[in-house]
Image (tube, rainbow, N blue to C red):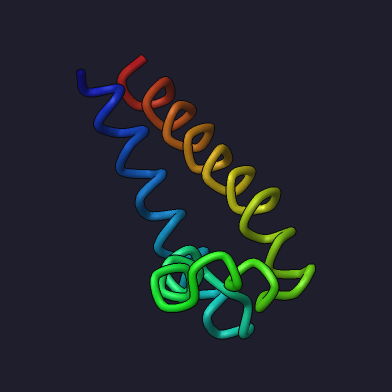
Length: 80
């Protein structure tokens, strides 16, 4: 159970940092995209750029996977 907690904590930390960075860079975050969807429906898909698509559907899942990996390594290092 501690392993799951540590991994989840690192995924959360990485997600917060990643979202902060993309907002600073002007890239659409999932929060922005969901707001677009709720306001504009399917037209939201035409309102974002290719960079936003790459971030949302390719890079962000990889970044979260990195958070999982870091959490797993930390757990194995500290708690064995």
